[in-house]
Length: 153
Length: 153
Image (cartoon, rainbow over all chains, first blue to last red):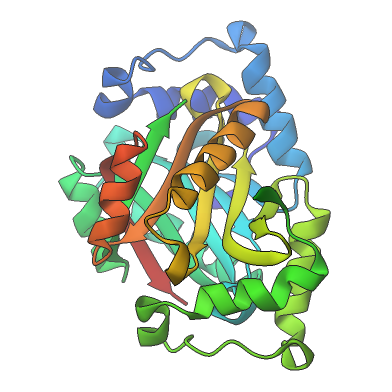
């Protein structure tokens, strides 16, 4: 199992992982396009992430198969004595690989990236309905100290 | 009242606003340095934010006085059909200016920046103890749909 930055050819598999999720389906994003139908906006987003040193799209690659993904964003800030923080978004582990320890290993990789980048805090938000995810992150040491508030524009 | 990107000379006033907060004090960040004692890490963070098109440190300037601040981060992503999102961090309104409508106007400015940058979602986390803040953001249309989880590294 290799954890690494995603390349352009990983994008369809990442979209598949993002779509294969009950809450994404409920939001109307439950269908992943096949490679040749990936929208221009998605390619543009990938290119922007790929070019930005403060964004990393990460995958878990099991012998050529993408089985997990997340996006890491590193943000400088003046709070907490100028501490850099890492925000983790869009975490998905393929359904048939859950409960295998892959998720924990993958997050350990992400938190190690945070340390390498000099972050002093890691943060994420998870939908309140994802009880399993809350327990998972609490086991990793995350504390649900904040309300995660969203506004669709 | 002018809402604008912060300059280097605003940094001490921004630090003062960040420090003047019960929860920041509890975290051990309740003292703001005077201008000549601002730490190198904070200047480095400011310079990095200033140079990064995906980060904006914003202030409310009332005739030369900084009376509110927040940081905006614009993040490209593959989720939600390649939607860009804006994350709002480190929001502070000076104690004597709360309840005056300044906070709402300031957030309206921030949400307008999100629209100008093509974001389809705005998000923030707020400490669960900040009941007033939750009501404030809910009035602006934010929904507390997520747990905000943090891990200090």
